[in-house]
Length: 297
Image (cartoon, one colour):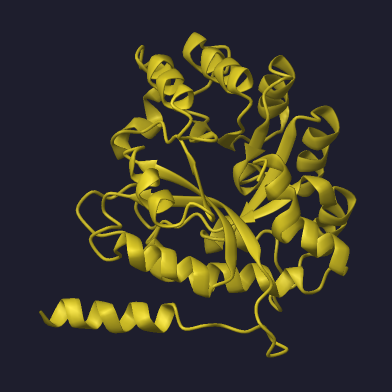
């Protein structure tokens, strides 16, 4: 009883209407990297998740579910806001084994053919776990996305951009959204990828403070000069996301609730800080317009 009361108080604080630094209402934004997982529902209800989005200025929310059908729960509550994409993991452990699943392509085809999902992902392709993008399951998945003309949210972690360039060029009709700007890559490698692949877009997710934030942001919250040059130079290709998974000290913990949605106001406030420093037209593209174009909203 006490836990439920405390949780209700916390959610109330999280959805309290926010304002920007000027005191004006928050500008609408698109969050293109949201998770809705089985263990998030232990601490946040679907209705509370939608309220958190609304009161933090999110007008377009790209949601992947684990298991995949969970994304439809949020869309049902806010169809004008939520864009469900098909999460390929039925259980969390599949993030490292999905490329060996002979049923995957059939499941994804059925999901996309239903018209309920408008993308695929998040798809983890990390060195040491999944090393060959020529794998038939991976190749067929990317071809399927091109067939249904939906984006694929991909998460790669390699020391150079060659890997993502390889599969983007091998599947030129597939639209790829690159999570965390390649996670560990320097801006010059991200630029090389964008130059090589006109079917590649990039999102900056704010969840992980020691990789996905610290490498891009100075201590004062400003974009580092090399990242600012990158963002300004490819303003039509960048978007923002929150990657609502927390805590992140352990990978996919099954024995504790995921409080990522309760961290979302902090994640989005981080993005608003550096976006406010950009020219208005460029900030608007990254904040909302690019996502609307990619997901055809």
